Length: 258
Image 1 (spheres, rainbow, N blue to C red):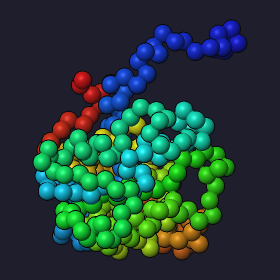
Image 2 (image 1 turned 180 degrees about the vertical axis):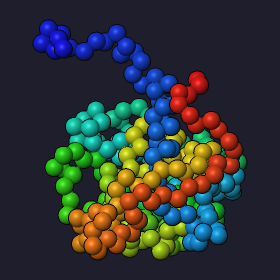
Image 3 (image 1 turned 120 degrees about the horizontal axis):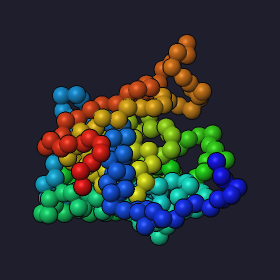
């Protein structure tokens, strides 16, 4: 293979890294991989796709405007790093602001209390919470919980206004205690730098199509749990994923026209 004779990589195409074409492909990967786990309190009354034109909406959560949290581990740094100074990209908050109608007021508050929520007339809220970046054994967990203050944010927001919760994580995490109060639930995994892929499906430019590649448990006491186990009783089974239709038709095939 010539590895010892030519141990270093070829830098001829290094200027293409992070190109717009690559980012568009990454954005497509995001919207195709998102899994819609819940859509409304009943099938007859779906919440998604969201309307782009509202008077005022709330965006909340520790991961809504944090590029490092979106990317997870193995991003520039070994363990990854929270914050927006690690790499270049678009957070979910920025994507939402760029997607909604220009007349829609987008209010961002990372961990709002109920008084703040009740004092504003929000049409709906988008909450993005999840895990902090990790790699290898640093990510080992015996409880698989959402990082604080995520649970509090979910309780405060979803207890006061229609809410869409987006989970950013490298694996299924504990969500059952909050599920009843959540109107719509999305597993976003680690969407990386292209937060526009999240907004693409939330607002109906494209439909949800992703399916769970892993069983989503109810409690960690059930683990390990796999398809075919005698007492297989998941919160969401392997391969589960609701679908939506786009509000407008787009050609989402590869290769993409630029």
